Each structure stands twice: as C-alpha cells, then as structure tokens.
Image (cartoon, rainbow, N blue to C red; front, side):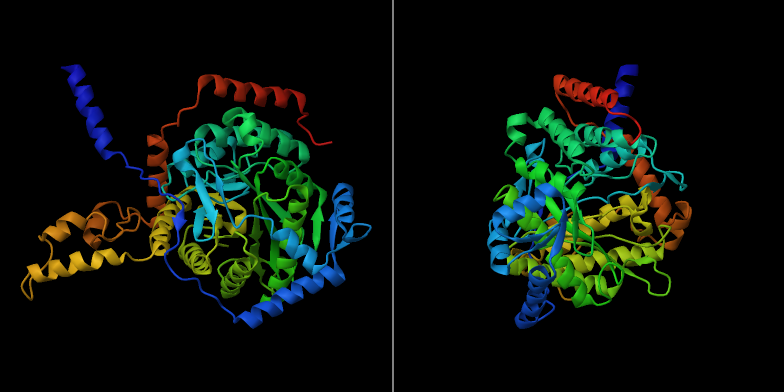
Length: 506
C-alpha cells in the first residue's frame, strides 16, 4: 500500500512539473526595419572605411601587428591602417551563418541570415538572490543560473559568465565556470577570453566533453571579444581570438561602447566608429584562419551627460541596433547586440520598460546573436533570479512575435466562422478545441486573473512571482546525462589546473 501511495504521489508531482518544450533557434518570419536609405547607409560605411584608412586602429600586440604587416597593411608601431578593399576582401571570407554543435545535438543551433539565438546576461559581480537580497555572486549562483538557462525554453545557449563567482579566486574562475557550463547544460556555451592560457584551458575542457578532434575543427562555442573603444584592440582579446580562431570556434567582435564617452556624442557617429572597430577585429580573425565564424556587432549603453552614468532603454540604442543590423546585412555578416538590458536596481517598472523596449528594438533590427536577454539589472552589475525567469518568459513571447503569422491558419478559421450563428461564440467549436492550447501565448508569470483571485493567491507582484518560479525551476531541474568517465576527466583536469595555477594574480 505504501508503495502505491509513493507511486501515486510521484505521478501527481510529475503532472505538476513544468513541461519544458525547448525551442529551436528563431527563424525570422517578420520584415527587418531598415532605418536609413541605402545611400545614407553608404555614408556611414564610407566614414568607417575612412577611419581605418586615415586614422587607423591600434592592435596592441606584437604578433598581431606582425600578422598585419605580413598581410600588407600599413603598420606604424601598434597603429594599423587598413585599405578598404583589403578589409572587404578579408571580411568576405567570414561565413554569413554558422552552426554550433551542442553536447545534445537536439540543442545545436544555427545563427546568421534569418536565424537568431537568445542567450543569458553576462558578467555581473552581484546577484539579486532568491531572498530578494543584493549580494556578491557565488559559484552556487553561477551553477543555478546555468541550470536556469538550461531549463528555459527560449535560451539557445547556456551562456558564458552568467555571474562572477566572487568566492572563487580570479585565476581559477574560468575553470569552475567552464566546467559548470559543460556539466549542468547540454546547450552550446561561451569560453573564457581573459588570457591566452584561459582560452586554451577552456577549449581543452570543451575537448574533453566533445572530443579533442571535434573541437579542433567544429564550432561548439561562441566567445566574446570586446574592443577597447575608441580604436584599440588589446593583447588580452587578441590572444583569445588567436586561440579560438585556430580551432574554428566563433567570436563576437563587440566594441564595448558607452555612447558619448567612448564614442562621439552622436548616434551615426557612434555607429561609424564601432563598425570600424568590429570590422577590423573580424578581418584579423580571418587572417588567423580564413573562414572562421566571426560575428559583427556591439554592446552599447548611452551615457547620461549630466551624471556620466550608463543608461539602458534609450531610443538611441534602438537606432544604433537598427543601423548595425542594416550594415551587417550589407556586409553579409551575422551580428550581435544585447537584449533585455536595464539600469534599474530592482525588478520594477523601469526594469520591465527598459528591457522590453530594448528587446523589441533588437527584434525589429534582426540581430542574430542576442546576449543578455535574461536577468540583467544595474547596467550589467547585477543578475536577478526573478528577472531571469520573467525575461525568460518574455523571450518566449519575443520568439513567437519574431516567427510571424501562419497564413495556413486562415481557411480552417473561416470554416469555424461558418459553423456558428451570428452572435454565438466559438468556445465549443471543433476548431477551438483543436487549437486552444497553441493559438495564443499563455504566460505563467504575467498575472491576468481577477483582483479577487490575485488577492486570495497572496497578492504577489512580478518580482515575487519570478522568485517563486526560479525556486520551482531549480527544484525541478534534472541534470542532463554526461558519461561518468568524461565527467571524471573534466573534474580531474579542473582540479589539476587549480593546483598548478596560483590563486593570486602576479
């Protein structure tokens, strides 16, 4: 009898468990919003080319400048000037789209062209935790966010630095983070880019899981390369580019732009500068390995000129994303930007407005790789559990919006109209019964109940609902299978490297 009760209880629990229907990459079904005329776009392109030809860009790395010099560029110290025809020839070797192999092939994704992937936020040193407290992020938080990213239907990658585990020594963090990304999710991931050795060790850990021969030539990751705007590529980023390019791993060439501070105080001026910076990085990667997947784009916040504080959710960010998308389509390159960003300190109206406005502009612009879609607060300084869940649901809605409408639905719907009398309703028709579960998106976290029902349910606001859902998802999480021998090798390598690498930076 006891055994039957446990079985019945297990079945009831299973019925209450969220059903995760993972979504493939978004295949866009709506038009792009081109914000300027072709001749205006060419003015921005020409301005970028003039910068690279006349002003030049610094590659602060001896290997990189030697590579440029051997390729025929004008090199003066670290300053490199690149002829526009040479640049365009180099970027033409980068693929217009590429596929990332996932540990679970069902989660492999293609991006570029009409294909878009969504990824979580990146790099926050603080979290707004499950008790709604702001505190330093820990390795436990990092693991939790890896699990959440795995469980989110519209997250196509686990991500990279989901938060900074501040309880782990800096020289060891990449080992713990890469290990967690590989273990707790079977989606594609991002590798460490903080030094050549860290990139090499991240790549080696990927090889343990995917097979070293596979990782030597097959793209399983897309990692981040930030330009130091204005007009500097430093050795740290360039070393990471060399490592990942040599193994055909993809890189995001993303000027880390504060509009008005690290760019001119001008929307079109900022785009001309960041485009020159990103294109120069992509061209360098093509010198290292022609045909290696290279993603054009930027991370952007504008600056409040009265305080110097970075801002999210301003209309100029939408304009810059739309211009960047239009340029990317001209260059034939996949492109990235950031999505659900907010400067707010709480999961409040500002956080919702800014994230939704940013993400809607991104969708209209047609980005192929959208970083920071979930959890982002404080201009990337804080990662929120509640917002990760609320944003995750929003991304499912953005996915449906981006997919467009299905015209095949029209004829069956018109047949349903013919089945009823004028003034009647559709609730009992065969068409409604066949389509009610999928016809319209039904959110779990946006409360649409009557006031009385909401009050009886505890009067929960969006933040409280998000925290409750995060706890539920973490409770229901089931680790994707990984061969015991592979897991043991991964753990052994991580611990061996931690013993060999000093805990303090020299």
